[in-house]
Image (cartoon, rainbow, N blue to C red; front, top):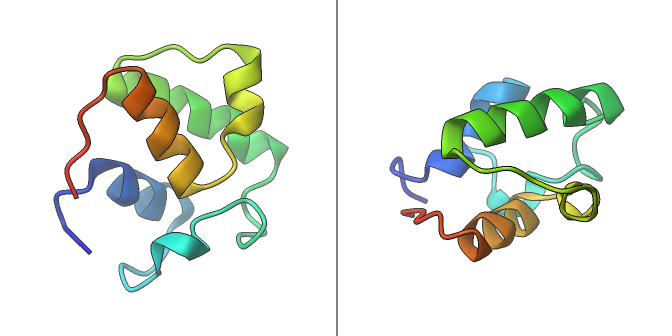
Length: 81
């Protein structure tokens, strides 16, 4: 795990999680706080932090750290970590 993983850090901060959480645990199914309202707020955070826009189909697929990371990568965002 790297402190330079901006997406991981954003998710940990956003949901108020311990830095010891594993990437596999950063998912909608693992986090009760990741509800529909949090999803709307998270999309705003992701868009402003990484300077991207998501369409509805993409938003529906953003349900975990790995899915968000993959989508950002397809948009040309270079994520360390």
